[in-house]
Image (cartoon, rainbow, N blue to C red; front, side, top):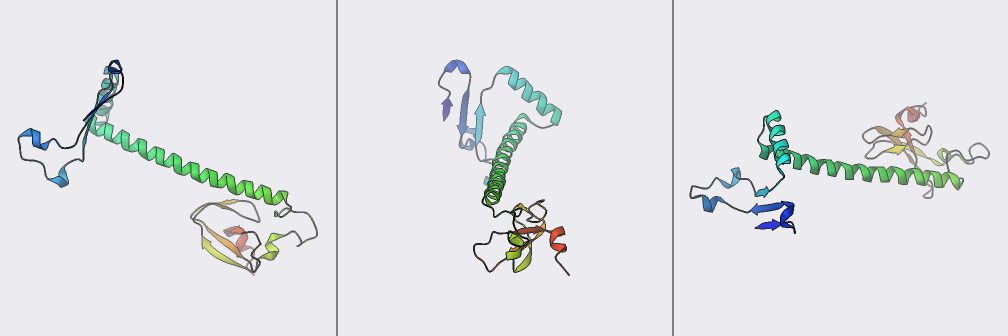
Length: 174
């Protein structure tokens, strides 16, 4: 199957060949040792020369270089998407903290001591290993995924979820 890019002058042509072993007239390679598909494309001469030079410098074939570039590109895109998701979660968390502060429910709310303190609503602290980034309710430090922290357990279902970093949680112990 040959797929051409609309205009014959562009020089872009891609061929995907499903199985060439039947056309070669020799014993086929074992299925486990065979690549899935052969993908061919036409490229401008200067790009071809650049690929040859880069492959020579890395002591790999042009085919292996192209495979590596494609795999690395897809990995890069996956990482960018993952980091974008993490960034959106961080922005959302920060926006919720700002909204809570604006409503007077944040940890810096004014009033008599203990009245606006969200830590006062916590009945117990549970040590946990984080699976996502959180912000310490006492010192406002970012506690990253994989670190130990303390989660505030409250009998009040409307109480905000509170987290303490290991340092601040250590100051609670007698």
